[in-house]
Image (cartoon, rainbow, N blue to C red; front, side):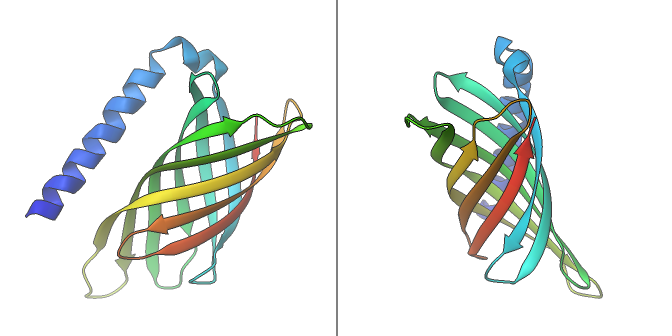
Amino acid sequence: MRGKRFRVWSVRLLISFGLLVWGSDAWAQTMGGFRVGIYADREDAFLGGEVVTPVVERIYVNPNVELVLVERATFLTFNMDFYYDILVRAPMSVWAGAGLAILYFNPEGPFPADTDVGLNLLFGVALSRRPVIPYLQVKAILSDRNELVVGIGLRF
């Protein structure tokens, strides 16, 4: 019962924060993006979408969703990541951060769906080009289903 309450609380927190950011001036500086990559431990590819919004100087919130392409199952992760943009003297951006992960796994057949809550630890590098910004990100998801995720993406 306690795990279910934590999951409900986590989803409410994600929704509340999303509504707060949506109504702020930071929304005008928001970027969208998509990413592809691999869940290395599983050796499964993924497709993802994201939004990046500044919170304060050099701190960003990055809600995102990833669809992991597994056989005979649906595997989705819903993430609310925060990261710090590290100041570097190069035409690139470097960041490190952490966030909340909700992992949803639903196999075909009579087996029940499983939802897990985890912690994301991430590191990324982007080329500072506009209007499209290519990037590489490595993320560790610490949960009952530990995952190492390597992705490349575009923000615009």
